[in-house]
Image (cartoon, rainbow, N blue to C red; front, top):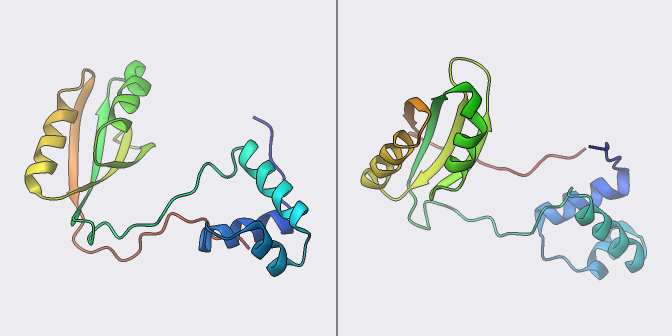
Length: 152
């Protein structure tokens, strides 16, 4: 994979889009004092290179009925790790899947409406071939939850 070099304009565009992904090219060009064509071309390049993977709304999961957040650590049989991660990543409720170091191989962040939904999820994860063990941590309080990257 080729390293992508982001200059100050790219970073400023990304920062603006993370604050409000609905900003028009005109508004971005006005804020940054660049031409509309430059804003358009920069954003298209950021999309084509995969720096911008998509645009979405940031939803308050609790207000959408998902009051329960869990961090699930999973041990899997080594040579089947990627297969397990792929299956876990496709399960409902999964927000993040991380390949990690330490006593466990996978960390999963997931959101649930209630304990019964969490229970079904854990039993489903344990039924995946090559999953050896899980440990589930229930989040008591969300202190910070923000997946936006803070650019300088």
